[in-house]
Length: 280
Image (cartoon, rainbow, N blue to C red; front, top):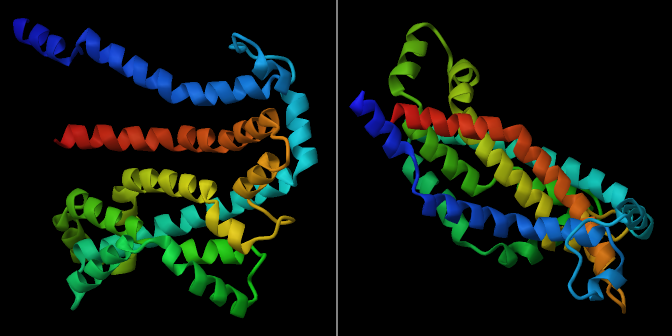
């Protein structure tokens, strides 16, 4: 009985720990909350002292102004297509490459993995000009192909899945599958993918957020009439007089899909963390 009490007492955090967590959560969530507050008022409310801390009644009117000022509906659709396609592709190809690098034996494996990791050290901006010239040659400028295709796989995803599968996927399990007559493709679909699901969920969430928030490359290669959501937000913020209410309303609307993705993948992420804790 005393041992159980000791374990329970050890699992309880110090009050200062909970206070720190509450403070971190507050300062992390306050910018989102403030965006919603501003989005529900007009510009005149921002000049009030003290500033408003409770929602107003202009949120839906401001949302309507957002969709009337910029092609925001098209921008949301484009970003969903771009981020969704890139996320699925990165998850699949990174898991496939991670399985090969982690568990398959072939000549040049370490050299190829090293070359993949080295590409992470090259700034993205260095490749903008040759990549744009390639898009012109392919006649993809102004289309979603120019945003999707260059990001279908990335070095971080390959390295991340390689490190995860090298630890989380037992070699004995693969050998047992081969003894039962499974081919490499069947092992990948029925053994590797279920084992990689928690890490793939984390990678998918990070990839979706990165693709959704990407601004520089879509701004270069797309037109104002066919934007992604970040390019559309820049259009809302442009003008001689800044309409902060309009810009933050668009920001609040653009943040909702990211929250939805976290809710959908949160169960997989927490399940992966708990699974690792139990194994440890």
